[in-house]
Length: 94
Image (cartoon, rainbow, N blue to C red; front, side, top):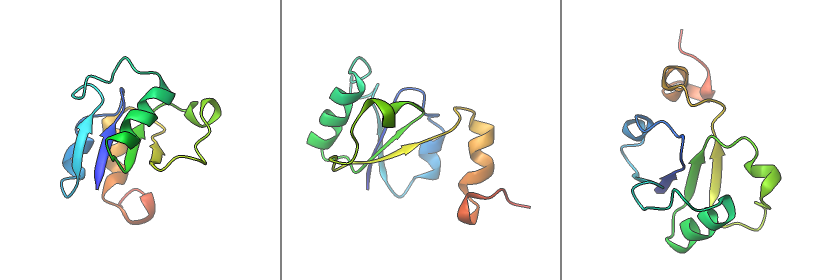
C-alpha cells in the first residue's frame, strides 16, 4: 500500500508500517499545498492512504468522492500512538 504522511504525522510511525511504501508530504515538497490540493496530488500519485492529524479535514473537504482513504490521528504524540500501534482493535496492551 502507498501511504502519505501529512504534516504533523509522527515520522516514527513509518517504522510500524514497514510492509508499506510510506512517504511524507515534506519529502514530496507538498507541504505548501492546501488540504484539497494535497488530496488531489496524492490521488494523482496513486497513494491509497493519507495519514493526517488535521481534525478538521472532514469538515473542510468532501471526502465521500475521494479515491484515497484518510486516517485522522487524534494526537501527534508518538508515545501515545505507540501504545496503540501493536494492539488488536486499537486497545492498549496490558
